[in-house]
Length: 434
Image (cartoon, rainbow, N blue to C red; front, side, top):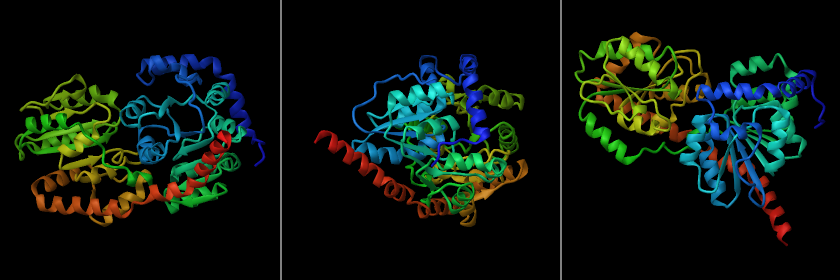
């Protein structure tokens, strides 16, 4: 396509270049809030922490933890074929996940701020031969500079929520300009494909949601055994990936239930681990005994609320709790991923705001593999019903597992779609060595 930019995109590039002197201040403020790592700040300015490996390099970029998790099986497939991989993300939590779960030899870097000079510095060093962007992290300078180097770009697990679609409708030429730079868009669902198509993407294939093919999250066996021993036969509830406004509802539900369920323990894992102390304050203010996992603490026999404010331990939580409320859904956030909980046999409760995973929640609800709750009263009632009816809980968890399994297959379809690009890289490598 023509490299000509729309007026808004040209204005964005000029403003982002002019704002470069403010970048150190921005990074300093983020560092103070725990959103950056001091020793890796250079990566946010496009300064590499590693040498570029020899040979063709595939670059995979996702915004945060959810995007990274969704492409871990894809990364594993390519790494097993000795394809050199660079993975970039933008959050501290995702960097922890990368350290824990990326295959050996796969390089992780923080994506640079969307400043033209930083992006050019990043690309000049890494010189990727193929770029895979995950879901919807469409930074204009990142896309424009990558396309100008004639790097084939593919949008994988492409997502376009209804809210994002409505916003982009106000700038149709600009989003079309960006989407036309992709060689291929692999959409999660027919609805995503329809929205992306109407915004101007040239080539679209509906491959399914990669998150459905991600293995259940791991858990440290020793930590799991220790917690199971401490908890014993106490009734356990959990709330995973919660957002502000939801923890208070879970705390209220616990307070109302503990009289009928002696020894009840509720585990709350906030979506952003740094909010752990605030969750503890809310529980303590409600008169409940509370402790934070981040301090190395374990629940004791009188602990009411155990705040799991650590990263990468949802696999532990889902193995401990038979009933889980999945957050981001009782507030206007769009919902968090229920797939991992379903794969690990937890009965799933969720609120009405699940736009980010609408198709999956629709399927789970239709199959009675999850239950919708609208407020604190219904959350409390659903918790009580599932704790008190093991047979009903087992039917729900079985339906959830079967539903998730039936919706899989996106990994194979995605690999088939990108295979021609991988074959081209392999052919180019053989020609270089001929």
